Length: 140
Image (cartoon, helix red, strand yellow):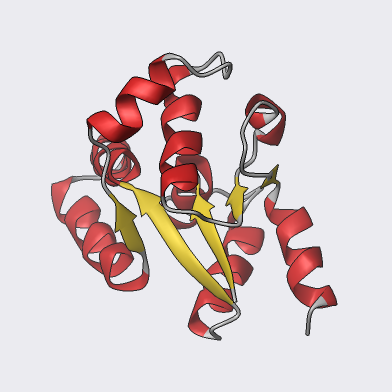
């Protein structure tokens, strides 16, 4: 079973039911339910998801969404062991560097994101939801 860090944008695609992206996100979440993937989120994704879901909807909605997410996903701590190397990372965007370092420290197989090119300096391969779904389908 592949161990995958879900970037915040993919989590939000499902939580906020983003029309152009929700179907792929649903299929990835289904793959976790089917035990074809093990899903991980960084602690920063948890807080960002809450903040953005509250902004878009309200606190009750955000709390309900997070309760569901933390039952499905393993949460990777973001502490100095993640932050310090992320500060020195060749990845330009600090948020992406934190995600990549969290995935590296947790020894994950992939990062799934809609901005895979921003992770090109990551030691963990990043791919789009579509690419990950293709990979999963090939390994059936």
